[in-house]
View 1 (cartoon, helix red, strand yellow):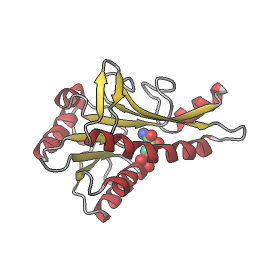
View 2 (cartoon, rainbow, N blue to C red):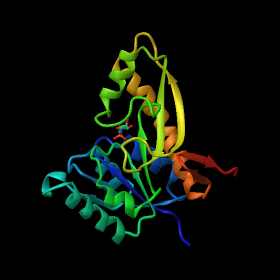
View 3 (cartoon, protein in one colour):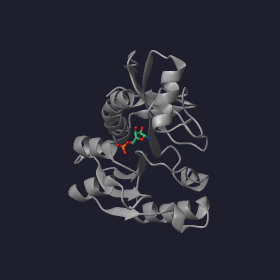
View 4 (cartoon, protein in one colour):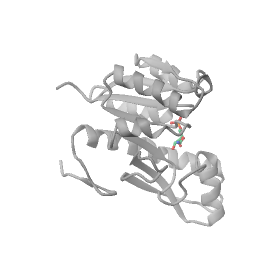
Length: 206
Ligand code: GRF
């Protein structure tokens, strides 16, 4: 039984990918970094880490199911055990989720179930948090299910919302929390310490 085989899906900068690579290389095997954008800087990060990459552009497919099928073929060929969405900006067809039940994780830059769901990603999340007057925000790592941002929550971390925050300053504080949280969630999964009970995730003591 070798190391857990992990694929990371990216669309942009890849700072979450970098946090995973920095913290988990050697503890899990990163077998693929998949991007839906050929210019994603995350691909450069993967290349520097010697991780195989693939680009699957949404625009190259007639519809979401075909796009997802192409991705499913790739992760199947690579014998992936766990898929980590890290800034991946496309909704995946349920066929991938059905093929990887409770084996796809995502990081969301807010404290789900608040400030999540359709259309709530990136800067919009932080704008909504600031507009709401909330005093804390944070990061959530959760399992991916068919309902966007509503899968079982694995880990969360809170950060303060400061009076003079802008969406950018809040985003930076939340991102730092994500960079701590995501590697920990994958480490717990690799150690078999996550027990999903309904929509709750119990962490088995080490
Ligand atoms: C993160 O804030 C993540 O929560 C959101 O998009 C951002 C990805 O950033 N989904 P990066 O590409 O990992 O730097």
